[in-house]
Image 1 (cartoon, rainbow, N blue to C red):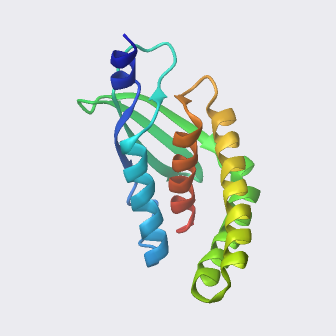
Image 2 (image 1 turned 90 degrees about the horizontal axis):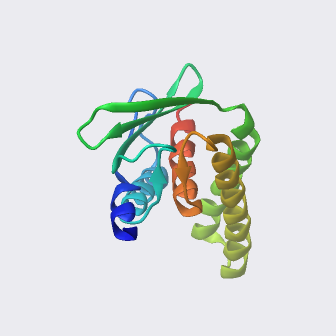
Length: 161
């Protein structure tokens, strides 16, 4: 029974709305690709009170709101949730600054400096994942690692806007 739930309660595809994002620099593109790959490798994702799954997830920005469109495996839209980005703005801004510092550091800083910046980056990432889980409470069920990776994709959407 647990194996069946593991097969149902998961994402099998994640896409980003191409009208919401532009091409990023190589570091950004790499982060997006890794986040999607990691999500698909291991995730927990479900709709409360729904016995279907696995799911497809399409993430975009619509009228400055974060949009999660959840589909069944056959492509039928099951639910669409719109979230205000306002609660994420400070975290996104801080995360962008620390990522810029990190990418500069990996090119020219000492290992100790890179590690210190990366610890800060991971801390902000964790904070963002917790916020995302809180904002999606009652709408979507996801584990912490999935929330972290989805935040990476939310951040990828922000890079255009």
